[in-house]
Figure 1 (tube, rainbow, N blue to C red):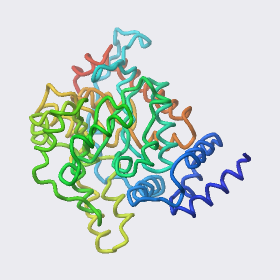
Figure 2 (cartoon, rainbow, N blue to C red):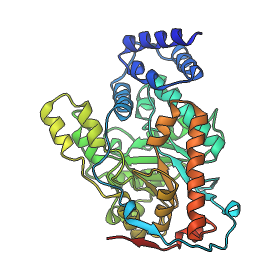
Figure 3 (cartoon, rainbow, N blue to C red):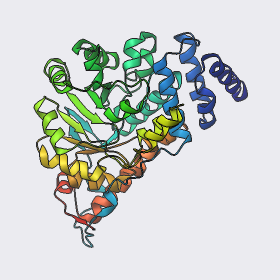
Length: 389
Protein backbone atom coordinates (compact mmCIF):
# COMPACT_ATOMS: atom_id res chain seq x y z
CA UNK A 1 0.00 0.00 0.00
CA UNK A 2 1.43 3.46 -0.86
CA UNK A 3 2.59 5.57 2.06
CA UNK A 4 0.02 8.32 1.41
CA UNK A 5 -2.80 5.78 1.33
CA UNK A 6 -1.69 4.29 4.67
CA UNK A 7 -1.67 7.75 6.25
CA UNK A 8 -5.13 8.44 4.81
CA UNK A 9 -6.46 5.15 6.17
CA UNK A 10 -5.08 5.81 9.62
CA UNK A 11 -6.51 9.33 9.66
CA UNK A 12 -9.90 7.91 8.75
CA UNK A 13 -9.64 5.23 11.43
CA UNK A 14 -8.70 7.82 14.03
CA UNK A 15 -11.83 9.81 13.21
CA UNK A 16 -13.94 6.67 13.52
CA UNK A 17 -12.77 5.74 16.98
CA UNK A 18 -11.77 9.08 18.44
CA UNK A 19 -8.25 7.83 19.15
CA UNK A 20 -5.05 9.78 18.65
CA UNK A 21 -3.67 7.89 15.68
CA UNK A 22 -3.83 11.04 13.57
CA UNK A 23 -1.37 12.68 15.98
CA UNK A 24 0.73 9.56 16.40
CA UNK A 25 1.37 8.85 12.70
CA UNK A 26 3.07 12.20 12.20
CA UNK A 27 5.92 10.83 14.31
CA UNK A 28 6.36 7.49 12.54
CA UNK A 29 8.60 7.25 9.49
CA UNK A 30 8.44 3.57 8.57
CA UNK A 31 5.59 2.29 6.38
CA UNK A 32 6.14 -1.21 7.84
CA UNK A 33 5.06 0.06 11.25
CA UNK A 34 1.97 1.64 9.73
CA UNK A 35 1.09 -1.66 8.07
CA UNK A 36 1.49 -3.46 11.39
CA UNK A 37 -0.92 -1.03 13.04
CA UNK A 38 -3.45 -1.58 10.27
CA UNK A 39 -3.01 -5.33 10.60
CA UNK A 40 -3.66 -5.15 14.33
CA UNK A 41 -6.84 -3.17 13.71
CA UNK A 42 -8.08 -5.51 10.99
CA UNK A 43 -7.58 -8.68 13.05
CA UNK A 44 -9.04 -7.61 16.35
CA UNK A 45 -11.69 -5.39 17.90
CA UNK A 46 -13.94 -3.14 15.81
CA UNK A 47 -12.68 0.40 15.45
CA UNK A 48 -15.72 1.96 17.07
CA UNK A 49 -15.10 0.10 20.34
CA UNK A 50 -12.90 2.49 22.31
CA UNK A 51 -12.97 2.03 26.07
CA UNK A 52 -12.40 4.85 28.58
CA UNK A 53 -9.15 3.11 29.57
CA UNK A 54 -8.00 3.02 25.93
CA UNK A 55 -8.87 6.66 25.51
CA UNK A 56 -6.85 7.54 28.62
CA UNK A 57 -3.86 5.56 27.31
CA UNK A 58 -4.09 7.38 23.99
CA UNK A 59 -4.22 10.71 25.80
CA UNK A 60 -1.10 9.77 27.76
CA UNK A 61 0.88 8.86 24.62
CA UNK A 62 -0.19 12.05 22.83
CA UNK A 63 0.58 14.32 25.79
CA UNK A 64 3.97 12.73 26.44
CA UNK A 65 4.96 13.25 22.81
CA UNK A 66 3.46 16.72 22.32
CA UNK A 67 3.78 18.58 25.62
CA UNK A 68 6.44 19.49 28.15
CA UNK A 69 5.61 17.14 31.02
CA UNK A 70 8.97 17.14 32.75
CA UNK A 71 9.24 17.61 36.48
CA UNK A 72 10.78 20.89 37.63
CA UNK A 73 12.81 18.78 40.06
CA UNK A 74 16.08 17.35 38.84
CA UNK A 75 17.07 13.74 39.42
CA UNK A 76 19.82 14.86 41.79
CA UNK A 77 22.32 12.81 39.79
CA UNK A 78 23.95 15.98 38.48
CA UNK A 79 25.21 16.61 42.03
CA UNK A 80 27.31 13.43 41.95
CA UNK A 81 30.51 12.77 39.99
CA UNK A 82 33.02 9.96 39.72
CA UNK A 83 36.70 10.37 40.48
CA UNK A 84 38.56 10.12 37.20
CA UNK A 85 41.20 7.39 36.98
CA UNK A 86 43.96 8.41 34.58
CA UNK A 87 45.42 4.90 34.69
CA UNK A 88 42.40 2.59 35.04
CA UNK A 89 44.42 -0.65 34.56
CA UNK A 90 41.58 -1.98 32.38
CA UNK A 91 41.00 -2.87 28.76
CA UNK A 92 37.91 -1.06 27.50
CA UNK A 93 36.62 -3.98 25.45
CA UNK A 94 36.91 -6.40 28.39
CA UNK A 95 34.63 -4.50 30.77
CA UNK A 96 31.71 -6.74 31.79
CA UNK A 97 28.31 -5.00 31.82
CA UNK A 98 26.20 -8.13 32.25
CA UNK A 99 23.70 -8.38 35.10
CA UNK A 100 21.55 -11.17 36.50
CA UNK A 101 18.04 -10.48 37.76
CA UNK A 102 15.25 -12.90 38.64
CA UNK A 103 17.03 -15.81 37.00
CA UNK A 104 17.77 -14.13 33.67
CA UNK A 105 20.99 -12.63 32.38
CA UNK A 106 20.96 -9.16 30.88
CA UNK A 107 23.66 -8.05 28.47
CA UNK A 108 23.33 -4.49 29.75
CA UNK A 109 21.94 -3.30 33.13
CA UNK A 110 19.04 -1.59 31.41
CA UNK A 111 15.25 -1.77 31.55
CA UNK A 112 12.94 -0.32 28.92
CA UNK A 113 10.54 1.04 31.51
CA UNK A 114 6.80 0.38 31.42
CA UNK A 115 5.01 2.71 29.05
CA UNK A 116 1.90 1.65 27.27
CA UNK A 117 -0.72 -0.85 26.10
CA UNK A 118 -4.43 -1.03 25.44
CA UNK A 119 -4.62 0.83 22.12
CA UNK A 120 -3.72 -0.04 18.52
CA UNK A 121 -0.81 2.41 18.47
CA UNK A 122 0.38 0.98 21.80
CA UNK A 123 0.41 -2.51 20.27
CA UNK A 124 2.77 -1.29 17.55
CA UNK A 125 4.95 0.54 20.05
CA UNK A 126 5.23 -2.46 22.35
CA UNK A 127 6.23 -4.70 19.47
CA UNK A 128 8.93 -2.28 18.32
CA UNK A 129 10.30 -1.93 21.86
CA UNK A 130 10.23 -5.68 22.44
CA UNK A 131 12.04 -6.44 19.19
CA UNK A 132 14.74 -3.99 20.23
CA UNK A 133 14.95 -5.47 23.75
CA UNK A 134 15.40 -8.94 22.27
CA UNK A 135 18.19 -7.78 19.97
CA UNK A 136 19.98 -5.75 22.63
CA UNK A 137 19.59 -8.16 25.56
CA UNK A 138 17.81 -5.81 27.96
CA UNK A 139 14.70 -6.07 30.14
CA UNK A 140 11.31 -4.58 29.32
CA UNK A 141 8.17 -3.61 31.20
CA UNK A 142 4.67 -3.42 29.76
CA UNK A 143 2.21 -0.63 30.55
CA UNK A 144 -0.72 -1.24 32.87
CA UNK A 145 -2.67 -4.30 31.70
CA UNK A 146 -5.96 -3.28 33.27
CA UNK A 147 -7.43 -2.53 29.86
CA UNK A 148 -6.47 -6.00 28.65
CA UNK A 149 -8.09 -7.67 31.67
CA UNK A 150 -11.32 -5.71 31.54
CA UNK A 151 -11.56 -5.77 27.74
CA UNK A 152 -10.07 -9.07 26.48
CA UNK A 153 -10.20 -7.84 22.89
CA UNK A 154 -7.36 -5.47 23.85
CA UNK A 155 -5.09 -8.15 25.37
CA UNK A 156 -3.14 -8.51 22.12
CA UNK A 157 -1.82 -4.94 22.52
CA UNK A 158 0.35 -6.13 25.42
CA UNK A 159 1.64 -9.40 23.97
CA UNK A 160 5.25 -9.37 22.75
CA UNK A 161 6.64 -12.85 23.37
CA UNK A 162 6.29 -13.71 19.69
CA UNK A 163 8.99 -11.14 18.90
CA UNK A 164 10.90 -11.30 22.20
CA UNK A 165 10.96 -14.88 23.47
CA UNK A 166 14.06 -14.50 25.65
CA UNK A 167 13.80 -11.11 27.35
CA UNK A 168 13.19 -10.46 31.03
CA UNK A 169 9.61 -9.23 30.77
CA UNK A 170 7.51 -7.52 33.43
CA UNK A 171 3.73 -7.40 33.55
CA UNK A 172 2.04 -4.43 35.15
CA UNK A 173 -1.07 -3.57 37.14
CA UNK A 174 -2.02 -0.67 39.38
CA UNK A 175 -1.66 -1.79 43.00
CA UNK A 176 -4.69 0.22 44.07
CA UNK A 177 -6.97 -2.00 41.98
CA UNK A 178 -6.48 -4.61 44.71
CA UNK A 179 -8.60 -2.33 46.93
CA UNK A 180 -11.41 -2.36 44.41
CA UNK A 181 -12.31 -5.57 42.58
CA UNK A 182 -8.95 -7.10 41.68
CA UNK A 183 -7.68 -10.30 43.29
CA UNK A 184 -4.67 -12.58 43.03
CA UNK A 185 -6.48 -14.25 40.14
CA UNK A 186 -6.49 -10.98 38.17
CA UNK A 187 -2.76 -10.64 38.81
CA UNK A 188 -2.16 -14.20 37.63
CA UNK A 189 -4.16 -13.55 34.47
CA UNK A 190 -1.99 -10.51 33.77
CA UNK A 191 1.14 -12.64 34.14
CA UNK A 192 -0.24 -15.36 31.86
CA UNK A 193 -1.49 -12.83 29.31
CA UNK A 194 2.05 -11.86 28.33
CA UNK A 195 4.06 -14.77 29.78
CA UNK A 196 5.72 -12.37 32.22
CA UNK A 197 8.72 -13.19 34.38
CA UNK A 198 7.51 -10.87 37.14
CA UNK A 199 4.60 -8.55 37.86
CA UNK A 200 4.96 -4.85 38.55
CA UNK A 201 2.42 -3.41 40.97
CA UNK A 202 2.68 0.30 40.32
CA UNK A 203 2.03 2.85 43.03
CA UNK A 204 0.50 6.06 41.69
CA UNK A 205 -1.42 7.59 44.58
CA UNK A 206 -0.79 11.20 43.55
CA UNK A 207 -1.74 10.56 39.94
CA UNK A 208 -4.99 8.89 40.99
CA UNK A 209 -5.77 11.81 43.30
CA UNK A 210 -5.43 14.22 40.38
CA UNK A 211 -7.54 12.23 37.92
CA UNK A 212 -11.25 13.13 37.88
CA UNK A 213 -11.90 9.38 37.49
CA UNK A 214 -9.08 8.37 39.87
CA UNK A 215 -9.13 5.43 42.29
CA UNK A 216 -8.04 6.83 45.65
CA UNK A 217 -8.78 4.11 48.23
CA UNK A 218 -5.23 3.26 49.30
CA UNK A 219 -5.96 2.31 52.94
CA UNK A 220 -5.10 -1.31 53.77
CA UNK A 221 -3.27 -1.82 50.48
CA UNK A 222 -0.10 -3.36 51.93
CA UNK A 223 -2.03 -6.36 53.19
CA UNK A 224 -3.44 -6.97 49.72
CA UNK A 225 0.04 -6.66 48.21
CA UNK A 226 1.30 -9.21 50.73
CA UNK A 227 -1.38 -11.69 49.66
CA UNK A 228 -0.39 -11.28 46.01
CA UNK A 229 3.31 -11.73 46.83
CA UNK A 230 2.54 -14.91 48.75
CA UNK A 231 0.30 -16.53 46.14
CA UNK A 232 1.42 -15.28 42.71
CA UNK A 233 3.44 -17.64 40.52
CA UNK A 234 6.14 -15.02 39.78
CA UNK A 235 7.97 -12.37 41.85
CA UNK A 236 6.37 -8.98 42.49
CA UNK A 237 8.05 -5.66 41.73
CA UNK A 238 6.83 -2.50 43.45
CA UNK A 239 7.21 0.59 41.26
CA UNK A 240 6.40 4.24 41.72
CA UNK A 241 5.51 6.25 38.62
CA UNK A 242 7.63 9.36 39.07
CA UNK A 243 7.63 10.58 42.67
CA UNK A 244 10.06 8.14 44.27
CA UNK A 245 9.99 5.62 47.12
CA UNK A 246 11.23 6.42 50.62
CA UNK A 247 13.26 4.16 52.88
CA UNK A 248 10.28 3.64 55.20
CA UNK A 249 8.03 2.62 52.33
CA UNK A 250 10.74 0.28 51.03
CA UNK A 251 10.87 -1.53 54.38
CA UNK A 252 7.09 -1.96 54.37
CA UNK A 253 7.17 -3.32 50.83
CA UNK A 254 9.97 -5.75 51.72
CA UNK A 255 8.00 -6.96 54.73
CA UNK A 256 4.99 -7.49 52.45
CA UNK A 257 7.05 -9.85 50.30
CA UNK A 258 7.97 -7.62 47.36
CA UNK A 259 11.07 -8.95 45.56
CA UNK A 260 12.32 -5.86 43.70
CA UNK A 261 11.75 -2.10 44.08
CA UNK A 262 11.75 0.33 41.15
CA UNK A 263 12.05 3.77 42.72
CA UNK A 264 10.84 5.80 39.69
CA UNK A 265 11.99 9.00 41.33
CA UNK A 266 11.33 12.64 40.52
CA UNK A 267 13.31 14.31 37.78
CA UNK A 268 11.78 12.79 34.66
CA UNK A 269 8.17 12.76 33.52
CA UNK A 270 5.76 14.43 35.93
CA UNK A 271 2.47 12.57 35.74
CA UNK A 272 0.80 15.47 37.51
CA UNK A 273 1.73 17.51 34.44
CA UNK A 274 0.38 14.80 32.14
CA UNK A 275 -2.91 14.85 34.04
CA UNK A 276 -2.93 18.65 33.98
CA UNK A 277 -3.05 18.53 30.19
CA UNK A 278 -5.83 15.93 30.27
CA UNK A 279 -8.09 17.69 32.76
CA UNK A 280 -10.81 19.85 31.23
CA UNK A 281 -11.73 21.61 34.47
CA UNK A 282 -9.56 24.73 34.90
CA UNK A 283 -9.54 24.56 38.70
CA UNK A 284 -8.48 20.90 38.78
CA UNK A 285 -5.84 21.54 36.13
CA UNK A 286 -4.37 24.32 38.28
CA UNK A 287 -4.20 21.95 41.27
CA UNK A 288 -2.43 19.32 39.15
CA UNK A 289 0.07 21.93 37.97
CA UNK A 290 0.93 22.77 41.58
CA UNK A 291 2.56 19.32 41.98
CA UNK A 292 5.11 19.67 39.18
CA UNK A 293 7.89 20.03 41.75
CA UNK A 294 6.71 17.13 43.96
CA UNK A 295 8.57 13.95 44.82
CA UNK A 296 11.83 12.37 45.94
CA UNK A 297 14.62 12.92 43.38
CA UNK A 298 15.81 9.70 41.78
CA UNK A 299 19.33 9.81 43.25
CA UNK A 300 17.99 10.39 46.76
CA UNK A 301 15.37 7.67 46.42
CA UNK A 302 17.91 5.08 45.22
CA UNK A 303 20.22 5.93 48.11
CA UNK A 304 17.40 5.86 50.69
CA UNK A 305 15.95 2.55 49.49
CA UNK A 306 19.35 0.84 49.26
CA UNK A 307 20.22 1.94 52.78
CA UNK A 308 16.85 0.81 54.13
CA UNK A 309 16.75 -2.60 52.39
CA UNK A 310 20.33 -3.38 51.25
CA UNK A 311 19.43 -6.98 50.49
CA UNK A 312 16.80 -6.03 47.88
CA UNK A 313 17.45 -5.42 44.17
CA UNK A 314 16.74 -1.78 43.33
CA UNK A 315 15.89 -0.47 39.87
CA UNK A 316 16.67 3.20 39.28
CA UNK A 317 14.30 5.09 37.01
CA UNK A 318 12.93 8.58 36.74
CA UNK A 319 14.78 11.00 34.49
CA UNK A 320 17.59 8.58 33.58
CA UNK A 321 19.01 9.83 30.29
CA UNK A 322 22.11 7.78 29.53
CA UNK A 323 24.94 5.54 30.58
CA UNK A 324 26.57 7.93 33.03
CA UNK A 325 23.26 8.33 34.87
CA UNK A 326 22.93 4.55 35.08
CA UNK A 327 26.51 4.24 36.34
CA UNK A 328 25.85 6.77 39.10
CA UNK A 329 22.67 4.94 40.13
CA UNK A 330 24.52 1.63 40.33
CA UNK A 331 27.20 3.27 42.47
CA UNK A 332 24.39 4.56 44.72
CA UNK A 333 22.94 1.07 45.15
CA UNK A 334 20.81 0.18 42.11
CA UNK A 335 21.35 -2.94 40.00
CA UNK A 336 20.09 -1.48 36.73
CA UNK A 337 18.57 1.66 35.27
CA UNK A 338 15.20 2.13 33.63
CA UNK A 339 14.54 4.52 30.77
CA UNK A 340 11.32 5.30 28.92
CA UNK A 341 11.17 8.67 27.16
CA UNK A 342 14.25 8.28 24.93
CA UNK A 343 13.00 4.91 23.70
CA UNK A 344 9.44 6.13 23.10
CA UNK A 345 10.77 8.78 20.71
CA UNK A 346 13.13 6.30 19.01
CA UNK A 347 10.34 3.73 18.62
CA UNK A 348 8.48 6.01 16.24
CA UNK A 349 11.24 5.22 13.74
CA UNK A 350 11.27 1.45 14.27
CA UNK A 351 13.29 -1.18 16.17
CA UNK A 352 16.63 -0.21 14.61
CA UNK A 353 16.49 3.26 16.14
CA UNK A 354 15.62 1.83 19.56
CA UNK A 355 18.56 -0.59 19.32
CA UNK A 356 20.79 2.34 18.36
CA UNK A 357 19.61 4.30 21.41
CA UNK A 358 20.31 1.27 23.61
CA UNK A 359 23.77 0.75 22.10
CA UNK A 360 24.60 4.44 22.60
CA UNK A 361 23.66 4.04 26.27
CA UNK A 362 25.72 0.86 26.43
CA UNK A 363 28.81 2.58 25.01
CA UNK A 364 28.44 5.56 27.33
CA UNK A 365 28.18 3.28 30.35
CA UNK A 366 31.20 1.24 29.25
CA UNK A 367 33.36 4.35 28.78
CA UNK A 368 32.21 5.72 32.14
CA UNK A 369 33.20 2.49 33.89
CA UNK A 370 36.55 2.54 32.09
CA UNK A 371 37.23 6.13 33.16
CA UNK A 372 36.42 5.46 36.82
CA UNK A 373 38.27 2.13 36.93
CA UNK A 374 35.37 -0.31 37.30
CA UNK A 375 35.82 -3.56 35.37
CA UNK A 376 32.37 -4.96 36.14
CA UNK A 377 29.12 -3.95 37.83
CA UNK A 378 30.19 -5.29 41.22
CA UNK A 379 33.22 -3.03 41.13
CA UNK A 380 31.01 -0.15 39.97
CA UNK A 381 28.76 -0.65 42.99
CA UNK A 382 31.80 -0.13 45.20
CA UNK A 383 33.13 2.89 43.29
CA UNK A 384 32.96 6.11 45.34
CA UNK A 385 31.04 9.15 44.17
CA UNK A 386 31.80 12.74 45.08
CA UNK A 387 28.75 14.79 46.08
CA UNK A 388 28.91 18.47 45.14
CA UNK A 389 26.90 20.55 47.61
